[in-house]
Length: 113
Image (cartoon, rainbow, N blue to C red; front, top):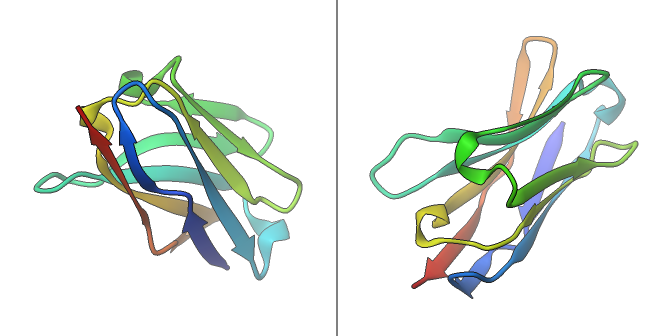
């Protein structure tokens, strides 16, 4: 599985961005897709995920502001509203097939205050 993330950029606090992740390869075997982020000097953290037949998960810091979505081919979107400076990070698309994990190259989101 290959993942290609896009949609990052520079936005003012309170603004919005939509990230996209295009999945290719054996996408029908995917059972989870997620977005992680890594801010400078910090560890990578899970932001939101969708599990097949289970549902969605959001980290508390983004609940009510971010929405994760996917289509039948496991392409994913992350709608981000009311962005804050704390959301500045590189955002990575992540997928799982059983115990195998896959990462996209990341897209940078910078929120100016």
